[in-house]
Image (tube, rainbow, N blue to C red; front, side, top):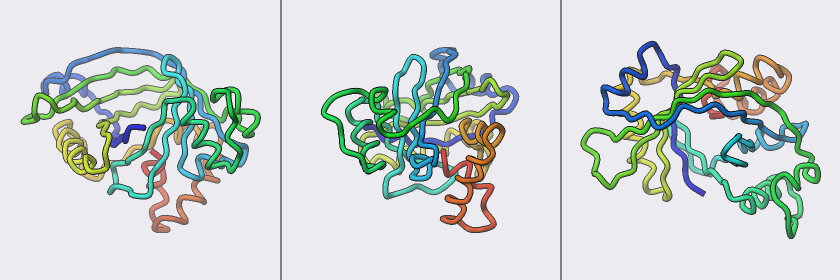
Length: 227
């Protein structure tokens, strides 16, 4: 899987105009439904694994590795191959890997059910940082608005090796600054806001798990940690 390095932010007025001024190119405007799955005990999310089915993209599994990056950025491995997703799910949930079948086929067997589902309107941009080599892949900037009223932006770089992460972080910080994002600005993911609004007991369960791993006074930082 690819390593996804990203930073979320709260988009302000004129953000698309600013992207155009920086040379950003609008690639698409799309609307899609995304649904997240977990056990009733949230075994995946509590282990920093995030399984979703996104309309038009299929199944995706994101999970954090042993090494992390400094906030407000996050780093996740993203799997899209069905066999790799099933194998990782079985490892986390301590189940035997089936000999055949895709993700949908193992949901019941692993005790997974839909936890959240919402529709997102997205404008997707690509942006080449100033001074970057022509061969360097562009950064992606996504501006999302969920159907429950929450808007969030994301600056993202995809890399294949851990050695590429520091350079990706530098580019993300630079672009975020040019977009007017404050140095320590933090923004929760859509899923976390959804849980907070519509499944407060599940949100509280995650809060208890992740706040124990962080400074006690920083429980509001949970949203960014969960990415």
